[in-house]
Image (cartoon, rainbow, N blue to C red; front, top):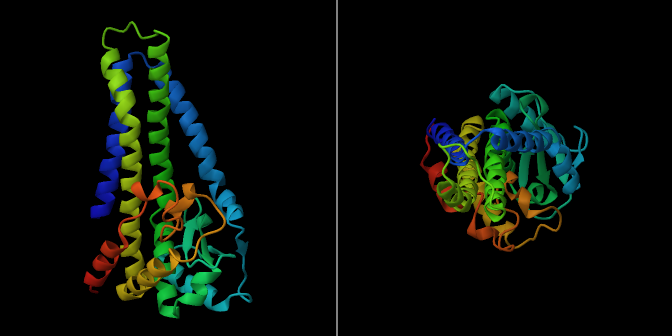
Amino acid sequence: MKNQIKTGIFLGVLTALILLFGKALGGSQGLYIAFFFAILMNVGSYWFSDKIVLAMYRAKEVDYHEAPELHQIVEELAKRAGIPKPKIYIIPSEQPNAFATGRGPKSGVVAVTRGIMELLTPEELMGVLAHEIGHIKNRDILIQTIAATLAGVIMFISDMVKWAVIFGMGSDDEDSNPFVAIILAIIAPFAAMLIQLAISRSREYLADETGAKLCENPHYLASALEKLEAYSSRIPMTVGNPSTAHMFIVNPFKGVSMISLFSTHPPIEERIRRLRAMSF
């Protein structure tokens, strides 16, 4: 519940930033245009992102005969979560990792790397799969799409303000404040990005908690995270893109460019500490 409240507050702050921009700019026409393009872009990614990301990582759907143990675990966890059984994909990578995608429980997908299946025990693999099914159950793809839409609007308006200042354009509305607008144009995009990252981290904690309850033992996931943290940094992810790092259970692109400065994941040590402290 705490993480759900936190996510609601973060989404509220993003919305408030948009309203502040609207007042500072004066007039609503530009705001409506920004909303239209941002929503169009993000709704498109919401509907097609699962197919795009699976293709990006060369993931292949596997049936029961190809991976019976994997199917049995996912089927049992989905039953406990009260959702339809997600489709199962395997990524041809030696790095141990996993992610979930899909617009909601009815279109859920769980993808695991070949490396994670070779590294983890059946109990640890159950912990990881429970975490990913937790993402599907909690509708995290939808929540992150809403956050991305709001952040996209803020960044779009920020660019509009900068161009308006360059060309000396502005609103004649007496409620507008060009000075406030330009300050917001500088600060708001950075704030929106930080809030997006905070939402992503909050949803990871929630998926850990949900996953621990689904597999009825938080130590399964805690033990898996310890191994994943140790091995994922040693074995590089050779496919994909850092922009999808937030989807994985642990960051697959550690040390790439500046990504470590703005982590999409909470510290592994803190996640493990919270899991170890749980008792059912």
